[in-house]
Image (cartoon, rainbow, N blue to C red; front, side, top):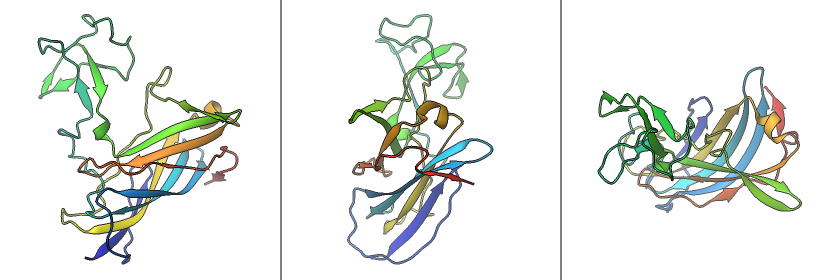
Length: 224
């Protein structure tokens, strides 16, 4: 079985490829290992860039822009026991207060604009790379949850299809995933940080989890 090597650059959603011929007998469930992390400072948004090594036996890594139907839909619209969409006005007690993550205004559902504010939940299978942030203080790690107030966001993401066709073949290579923000320095300053990462293939097989070494932004900083 021929094995294809690919390098993915996921920074502003641009992609670059290279090919060699690595060994055979790769796993069905993708395997990853940590490679590198760097903090790239520019005149615009700064980038926290992590590089992972990967191996996969089928090559079904990455999602195309058209992969938006179940199970890759971005949002799950919440309904009540009667199957009716839950609006902010008629929200149950357990629903969150308004924020831009849990509520969507005038969504387009089945090609119809719903002129209301609807409760939604994020579908984790919309993403195929998952990133958790931890801050280390007094020897203890505490997860920094971007999904909580005041950010209501995520740095999970989608990397594009590695192979141009659907033929199964083993692949290995690198994923270089860039996370853009104007606020890295203001949020973390001199904190010691660790990242935990996983990827997922198109069959929803979740890889092993890997962790970066502890770092501060100053330790991994470079100027572009």
